[in-house]
Length: 113
Ligand code: AMP
Ligand code: ZN
Image 1 (cartoon, protein in one colour):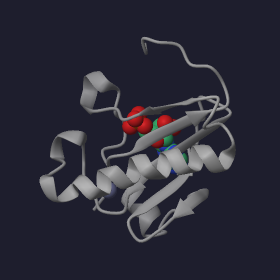
Image 2 (cartoon, protein in one colour):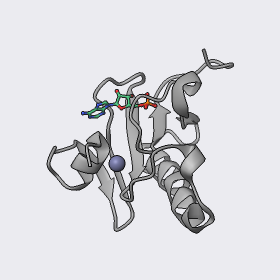
Image 3 (cartoon, protein in one colour):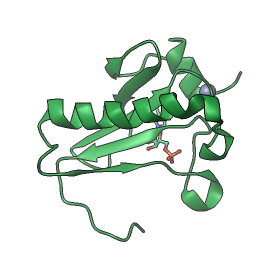
Image 4 (cartoon, helix red, strand yellow):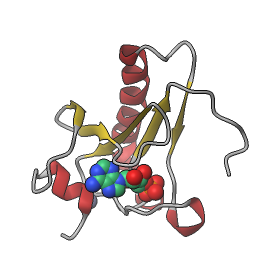
């Protein structure tokens, strides 16, 4: 399958890994938008949020849990941080393998652009 993030899971491309377990992989974004900008992905290929099924609920919870734990371990949980999942064209999704952006180390504005 021609999917950039699946290639990272398979190590056809070597990501800058921050965390890995049996179900998720977290690595530094190549174009960081904050002092810390990590992408957390399921190892299973799911193209978009729209494709998540009931059997994936624990996996999605694990993405969120991993984000919160990394924020704690990296020291910005108390200051706060931003997690984002972009979906499809209007959401600004550019890689069609579900991923959670974890950004920290600066103050974010709201609403998002
Ligand atoms: P999105 O626009 O929500 O689909 O996010 C995709 C993210 O993947 C962007 O923030 C990109 O900077 C990031 N990205 C693209 N290629 C790579 C790569 N080779 N390694 C790490 N991050 C990447
Ligand atoms: Zn994939």
